[in-house]
Image (cartoon, rainbow, N blue to C red; front, side, top):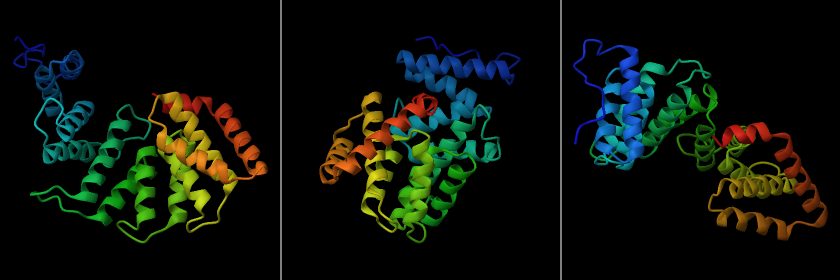
Length: 258
């Protein structure tokens, strides 16, 4: 089958336009189901430092999507992004890829890669997640960092810091953060319990998950359990706050859904 990727032997090999075209060709091939052509185009763009191509290849190797699963190869692609773009503006077009690359690398350090030089290093993982969560303001990084604080992974256990990071991500519309924050506020684990706000965030998480078509079984179970134990005053206040938050944050919610 003839490759859909641009001829890499043309004189303007390194031109930005040709690199972008190779990325677009690779992306189109990927979504059409031609994974080999996709890899060809993406690798060409990645070789010349295209962060989106590097990120997509990292995801493909991490998941074994059209290629043989290879965590070390995935790590290498994510690391190329981090090495070249760590100081890019958080508002730059490539910022989402850079932030997610930090998250992926952080998770590799959390668990390590067998039979490689990438060994488990919780402290290093927490440092990486902190950078992505603070500098880039990445919601997924904020949730992962909160999980590490709750588990005492890579440093001291600190539920208050976990709640802080979960709150930042929850306000961005991140469903997992909203559900976890709700649980934490209900339990009062390491911080004052707040049944109203705990039930509020669980209700927001449930409604958001339903809107997005997620599997809501776990969140519904948590929300219904919290609802059953709350008195009428707490229920009314929590539902009112949840509805108000969803109404007042339609723009935030819409952005999080894309």
